[in-house]
Each structure stands twice: as C-alpha cells, then as structure tokens.
Length: 169
Length: 169
Image (cartoon, rainbow over all chains, first blue to last red; front, side, top):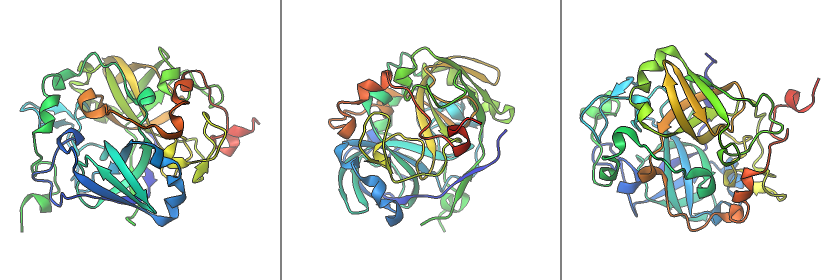
C-alpha cells in the first residue's frame, strides 16, 4: 500500500455547532443553517469564478474523530454497518464531504448555508457542485434506503467525538 | 492555519487509463468503463453492507498532479478560472472525487464502472452515494453552465500531469 499523503488545510469552516452533540448529521438536517469558511489568504486567488455556483462541495477533516473502527453503529440505524457504507466520521481516513449552498463571497470569506459541520473544522478542498458530474441515477441505496430521509431530523451525539469531548469536564 | 494532516491510502484504483492523455475528464465521459479497486486487506471488514449501494463516492489522491496554480485553464474552457471553481487535479490539496457505479464486491476487490481515474491512483475513502444527502437543486453552475455537458466528449491531455509524464522519455 502506498505511503502516507499529507495535506495542509486551506481554510477553517465556522458554524453554530461548537459541540458534536445535537448537530445535524447531514446538510438535509441543516437547511438554512449559516456558516462561514475563512480561506487562507494565500489561496484566495483560487476562489475566482466560484461565486457563479449556487452549491459547492466541501472536503474537510473530521478533526475531532478519534481513531476508527471498521464496523460502526450509525446515527440512522441500530445495527453495526461497515464503515465505508456509512458517512460516519470515525473512518480510516477521516475526511468529510458535504454539499452546501454558497450565498456569497467577501474577499477570502465564503458565506454558506446548510452547514452540518462542527465549528473550527479544517477545510481541505472546495469543488463546484455540478449536477452533470455529481448526480447519478442511484437505483440502490442499501441500508440507507428507508433511513436516509430520517437524516433531516436526527441529531448527532458524542459517539464519534474524541474521548476528551465525550465526557464534559 | 492548521498543521498538515496525513492520510494513508486504503487501496488502489485500477482502470484502463495508464496515461493522462486521452482519459475521460468526468465519469459522464466514462460510462461503462470498467475498473477495480483493490482495498487494503486490513480495511476489508469496512466494506460490509457496501454492496447494497449502486453508486459510491471515491475520494482519491491525484498522485500525478505536480504542484498547483490558483488559476487554471480547465479542459472545458479556454479562459483562466480559479482552481476551486474547477475539478482540475493540480489544486492545493490534490484530492479527487468521483461517483462510480459499484457492480459487485469480491473479497477485498470492488468491481466498478464509469471510471475516470488513472490506473494506480491511491484511494483515500469510500462513501455511499445517497441522493437524499448528495443531490441538491443547484440553480447556478457558473462558468460550467453551458459547458458541463461537453465533459462527456472531452478527453484529458497532459496539462495536469507531472513533468516526467508530460514529456515522453
């Protein structure tokens, strides 16, 4: 297997969620929740033309995830599932993916909505959301088939947080 | 800005594309193209339940991308665009994102289709593709609005390859 690959965050995502407990678990449960992404000024020129897009992918590090297990009990189920069949944060490479609404850009700050990310999350990449590339006719959505709609109502708890976040001091 | 974050690939993506030149630039241009993902046996248990999904996200490293520039001339345009408004490989954190069809899983091997990835690409993560989470009503797709459909026909060239790939020896 290949060697480690390292990335330097290009910004920080800010949201109203300062604690994993009570957070939405998907953008569908975070409709209208405002947030900001503060981009490293050194990367600001890369934002050119991004304001033409109503939605963007954010790729980020689940920086509070503490290690991983290959079987997890996801928020939307009470059975153990293979981690790659879930969007759980505690995964071998703790990378998160969310599609959010881009409201506007002011200098190096993106104002966004539908934010399901904890405050202070390190941003790794931004990609335009383009239905022609990103939308597929998914016939089967596995164990999530009858559960995905519930994501709008379910809230996170402390199960995926780092140990020192799980037990309040 | 936060420190570097490092990831260890969980597998390798295999495809018919051994050279960036001539590759599809998006899965929409790679319909039916078969590929395989060989998962690190140590991660195999994490594949449980994944076979229920017809489509999956692959997050991978653009391992041939050589550095980056903040303005790029994308395959689908002849103007310089901010790199974050493109899906170009040469980006500050060279992470790729594709939705592919999952045909079947045999032990630690995923058989996939619609592969727009070069052979030997290091895989970072797999997530289930779930329309309820991943599909948004994107009203605006910026400079790609009139160009995204063309992605099915456009092929890659060497512009994003590492220097030793650009000039044949």
